[in-house]
Image (tube, rainbow, N blue to C red):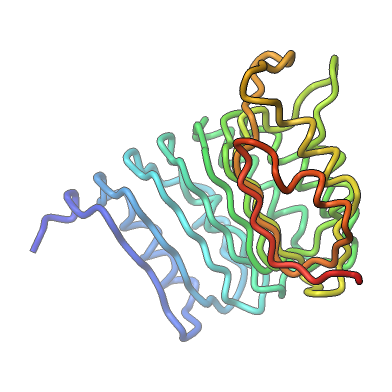
Length: 258
């Protein structure tokens, strides 16, 4: 058996709700795994984590990939508050639709984690998030992802987001600050499958982040968009304007309005 400091992958999971004390044990042993590269936390807990657990951020100096799966029907977005990981590259958070009362704390946890860790995060994935106030959720989302200046991949799966506002925020215009200048991969799947219309803003956003092979962008630091994956949206024929752009892989699993 490998010494714990040489272990590179760890999954902490339980289908049975565990106590606050048991959760504390799991969190407190993490710093022993100094060589940990991949970590997945998938726990059900009885209640929100106490301050005694979240007040100390456990350092995982080698961690590059983190997935947190919030299975509990009770709000518990606190696991991220327990960690500091300066080398993290990939962050995935599964919300499981339950946590409508914790929208602000979710994004606060992400922002606080970034302030502590100062990561060069390249990939962020959010799955199974549903809140009644879609516009406010989208506002919190765009404000939070803006702190990850090196983000290359943004994936939203089964997420209740206002795509008009999201595309508008991601559209680059001369003289304005660019949200996610290094974004190369965007993947979207709406919460309301097959009933959410793909807005015209998609075309404007894509064209603002694309340029022909023989040209250069006039926006300093902007990287050309390379892949867009869209699932379960309604769409019309306008999307054909961006279907054959050189260097852009457009993958569509959509429902036509016609």
